[in-house]
Length: 231
Image 1 (spheres, rainbow, N blue to C red):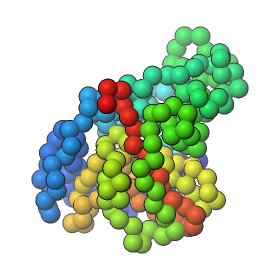
Image 2: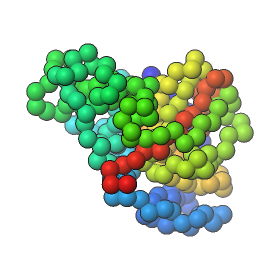
Image 3: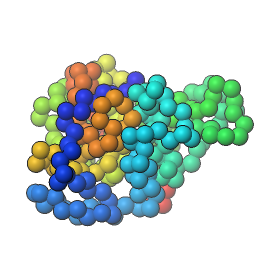
Image 4: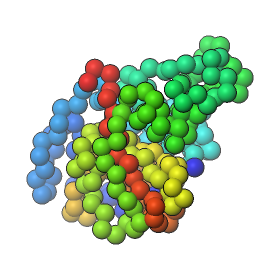
């Protein structure tokens, strides 16, 4: 399952600009220069920008797109140079916690095109932070309400564009993931934004959840910093 952002906080003002690594953009109020992204991270970010509002035909669209959040995040990581681990032959149960793959071609085990770590948010989170060494949790923000959340919490925690936000719902389950994309001005306030495949805003929506499912205790957001190849 994936989170739904209603879209009321999306900004389309002509003066809004997104601050991405490698592209220093002056905001009002002034922001520090954007950090320089590695080539692999830049490639991941560019993929998320290109496909946030569309579907790469090389991949299946899960749930008509509304259940596609983890599939999209995995595509972003692959675009950034992370290699597949395992395949549908050795992971016949589809549930090995240390495998991560999507088989676009070649020999495919029936009904096992992808690993659960590729398509499910909780399994993705555990693979990235516990079983692969690819990322680490650098911050956690409880979201019992949207009120009072820091618009810049992800970047203050140390996220760079191409990193991930994992969303835990009111039942304590991680059910959504989004790609951190940088900063933009929203209603005159510098705000960290995300790219995602889900209902509502997909490109440059703010990182803060709207729906009741993700704004009741013990809901929270975990900020995960990835170590892209070459970093």
